[in-house]
Length: 111
Image (tube, rainbow, N blue to C red; front, side, top):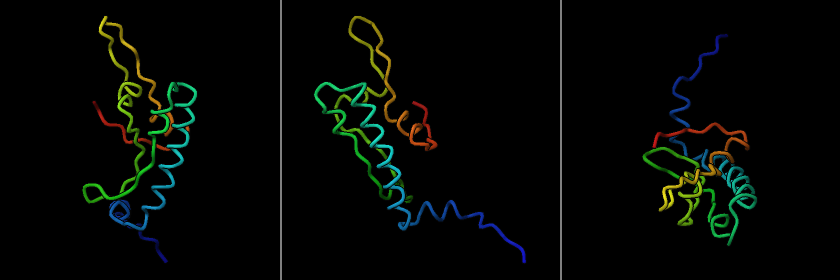
C-alpha cells in the first residue's frame, strides 16, 4: 500500500464550513489571552478590553477565524501613535502577543 498525500487539502479546508467551529475556538483562546494582557497593560475604563472578541466566518471565499478589538482606541493601543508634541508612543501589540502566547502562528501583513 502506498500513501498519497492530498496536496489540495489545505485549500479545501480553507473553503470548508466544517472547520469554522475549530477556528472560532482557536480565536476565542487568543481573545481570552488578549483580554488578560489588556487587563494588565491597557486598562483604564475597560472599554478596550471588553471590545476584544473572537469571530469566525467566510471572507473572500475562505473560512477564517479572527480576533478583533472594536474600541476606537484599538489601533493606537496595538500599533502606537505620535503625540502632538512629536513624542512617539509605541504600540503594545496586544493581539499579536496574545496569539504568540497561545501558541498560534500569525499571518503577518505589512502596514
